Length: 346
Image (tube, rainbow, N blue to C red; front, side):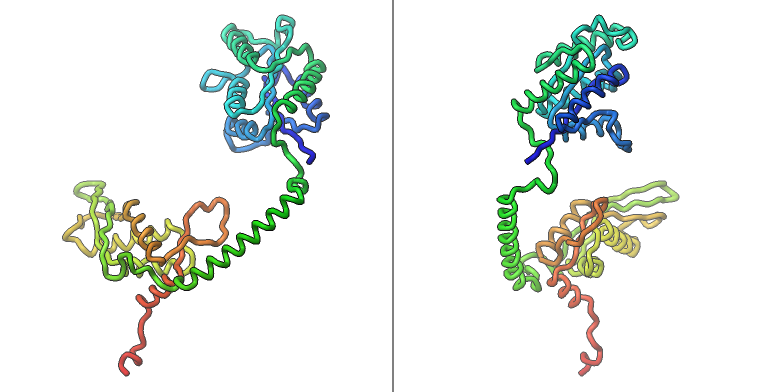
């Protein structure tokens, strides 16, 4: 397969515009894909998040040092050094190119304060602990990059990038087809074996008129005491819980909506029981605790009454969806359907 490698070019920018152009041209002539700050698209992400993502996708990393240390991050190091450290941390093969005659660099392209110059020297020493080459000018740098990268590719092979139509060999396609056939057989077998119990609940778990105690937080505003919050619990039968939540799960329902529905049910019960709860609140709300809500979900799953929703949704929709199983649907109908008065009186 014809591979192409993405190569990240790291350096200060304003003082090395021409040199970066030479390096990019050299990489393009090698059928590589250069990646650098001048090629980054406009985005809403912060700068470092964007840079990290491009480095992570790159096969090789090149750093070019001239006469400037560069703009610094909040940590007090330059973006160039931070990029270098991140590439090393990820284990990406790196290669450095250090100016051969720093004293010959025009004053306008060097740091004007000693602190930055010292940091540049220290960064240069760090880079030279790995594979480095010295460069004199743009054309010389481009030639050194071509030779150095060729050596780096031979010594440290990387995955690279391939065209989509070349990504799989005929052998791989055959193997995938075989795996898909095996998966289809297993899915068919699973459907056949689960059909028998699909319409039956697992009554080995608490259900029906058995009770469960659910913890909640009751909030509101009292004219006498201001904002108030009280903890407590309410007791429900499993049948009542299914009666409240079940109708919303005939079709798939997002968990936040189900939880809000049950919160509203609990608030109604609190307002109908003034003896056990503060009764002079306005703007009231009730919220079931995470632990108690989790207990409901686990129990309904254990009873085989609900399963995760399977409909396709947008990438931005992160909610968990629940729906009734056939057993759950049958159970709900038996709970809530009204029998015929005529038949009853016959």
